[in-house]
Length: 310
Image (cartoon, rainbow, N blue to C red; front, side, top):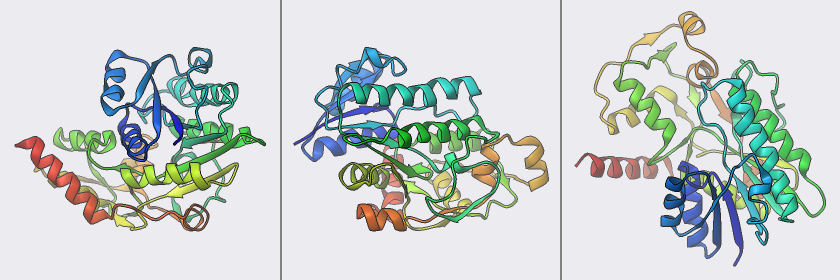
């Protein structure tokens, strides 16, 4: 089988990706910065590589012999300042591309996000022809756009680059869900303008399926949206997750005008407007189809949460 190299392998999506790669018979090396992260990926069955993401020279030799690099490492705090996003998401992506080229890795797959397209207007039934927004007022979104452009522009003969864009990745251990649950329990969460916006979401196994298909079938230099292909009302979906995780306090509502004043971007965009994405391209070109349905995913989350509480 093949050898894969993963950045961000100790994270939420990265751990599921490593498990899937190993299950499929591949060997995996994973870039880590700390001893704790090294222990985590080693426990999964991958070989940890201690190095600094943004310095390609510290890990490019370890990537030699890899058939694919999956680049998942990025700044995950949407409220972080522009410098942090530039350092991790932008410079980290450039370093990962540089390392892949040095190692002569034939395929580079980045885990992107629809956030790269966000600059204030809702994304409604959009496809991959919608433009990237490096001019976004939100540093998180601007950095995502710049990083994706680095990856797409790096595509060349003998070096295939692909960007996979899942939307709101959820499932057991989701740091996004955990953060929202913690905010709701602490009284720091509110529904914006009722919260009844139609949105796409992506169960983590479906995001991983998209990443693997991007490696196997992705057209060079292309981006693909990946979702559960089952749109949900944001408030209904969150209320279900909140109930599973024991949120029993009433959650207030704020109107759109108050949100514009008090809720920073991109949080206000993520929670206060619709986001629906077309996955026709992934279905047609990658052969993508969700491997876990929303009811199945919710049942998995419910069972694991019940086990933790007991």
